[in-house]
Length: 74
Image (cartoon, rainbow, N blue to C red; front, side, top):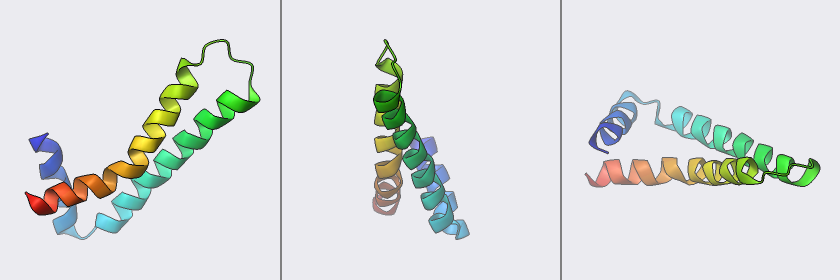
């Protein structure tokens, strides 16, 4: 966890904080929409893949805010 906070602190110091945050959120949104599309529009017998994509998408949408807040507090 310390390594992740070091990387986030380095990104925040370099000035690319906004770009990286929106890039991670965009990847999360694509994963969320992909999981939702697989779940609703396909006949998949195994629902693990869409569920994992939905969970990863939600985590990636929330993670940048939480990591930047933790880096500021640390």
